[in-house]
Amino acid sequence: MKNFFLRVGRAFSLLAVLYLAEQLPAFGQTSGPLQLHPQNPHYFQYQNKPLVLVGSGEHYGAVINLDFDYKKYLQATAQDGMNTTRLFTGAYIEKLGDFGIQKNTLAPAEGRVILPWKRSGTGGYTLGGNKFDLNQWNEEYFARLKDFMTVANQQGVVVEICLFSAHYGGGWNYSPFNPKNNVNNTNEIGSVLVNTLENGNILAHQEKYVRKLVLELNGFTNFYLEIQNEPWAEAPDKVMNRNEYGPAEDWKMQYQVVSKKSDDWHRRVAQWIKDEEKSLANKHLISQNISNFSYPITEADPNISIFTFHYALPEAVRENYHLNRVIGFNETGFAGSKNETYRRQAWRFMMVGGGLFNQLDYSYSVGSESGQDTSYKAPGGGSPALRAQFKIMKNFLNGLNLPTLQPDLSVVKAAPGTHTTALSDGKSQWVIYLEQVSVKGYPLTLNLPRGTYQAEWMDVTTGQKLPATTVTNGQLPVPESTSDKVVVIRAASARK
Image 1 (tube, rainbow, N blue to C red):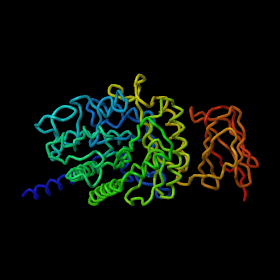
Image 2 (cartoon, helix red, strand yellow):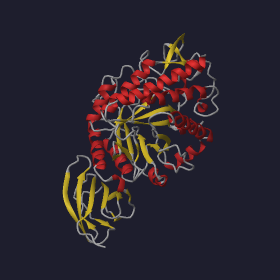
Image 3 (tube, rainbow, N blue to C red):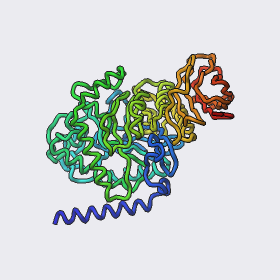
Image 4 (tube, one colour):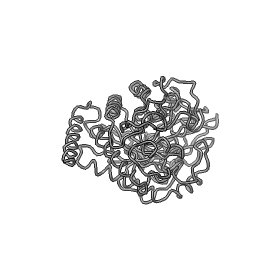
């Protein structure tokens, strides 16, 4: 009898999802969910248009924090020109003060957290209130989650749904999967085993959680699913302080010590998602968070369409471009407060073929959901001025013929006084980004077919168009200034 009611309930849920799909706003419905571009899978396609995703958002707690006004936040995100945000869904939360973030949306005030599971009648949750019952879903949470997704959909915002996270040691103490925090007698294990296949009876609860979220969200087209945030931080005795920035080689070595147990678990979660969506209307992209800085991916899971990095170097794209999937930079924000730092991170990454960039923006907090807070204390940055600079980049890139573009390592032969990266279609359009380090604009020497070319310049900080120049005999004059620039070169009278 119990199985009968489970089957009936599941069928009812499926009908509800299909009904929701019909009722959603027109945004994104004409072409289905976000997908990789069929012509160039290093970029996305949505609403039948190629695009890159660029965001600068709050610290991932917009839904689980009852005090956070996500409607105001999403409206502000869209008004500032951002088209993506990142969201944690409840398996991991933080407490106030963690990581030096004083106004942390992922750390709700006591009694103001809402998670996918109902509270039990037993007190003793580590962060206050009653423990959770992992066998009882909290429908108020799912109503809030789906309302968030509906507003994001209306505002043209694509959401990264992040299912799990590393626990960084202390974070495991707050997790609803921890036996201290639930009434379901989950196994007592070390935090490094939580997101592995050796986590005892926790695995079954993780599977129910994943499948429930996939089912509830299936009617929406404006999201992709990321399995776990920062899995490399689970490696015992290898957790670097997030405020430290060691050489990329150190991170590669650290990533190598993350056991195969973690990778097997990731593959299992991806398969849960695929299995659950088999009978559902929409099929969504799945993302895997790989490492800090860069790392060459081997034996890539075929179920993964997006590989993301934190504090990423351009090498993260170059080392993995051959995989023909989107390479994303989905967290930065622990590198001080200078706008220039994050703007340059973004341009460097996207101009070697990246398809996704997201800034962790501390100007958003409870009571400052429009991102206007200038008094925050945190290890990173964020401001309307910085978002304006990201908007310039996003609009510029989405204004190009993205599907035809690939990284171009040969077009710039010499670039005195500046650092350059380039994209091109190899025959009629070249896009070059310059980090200007010299006031005098020394000419670039370019490797182009013989002919005359028109060069259109833009200041990447202000978006201001600069005087156009002409490429003659491979020499491109550069406007004199210390500002970073981007130039689009098109053939005027190119000949073979």
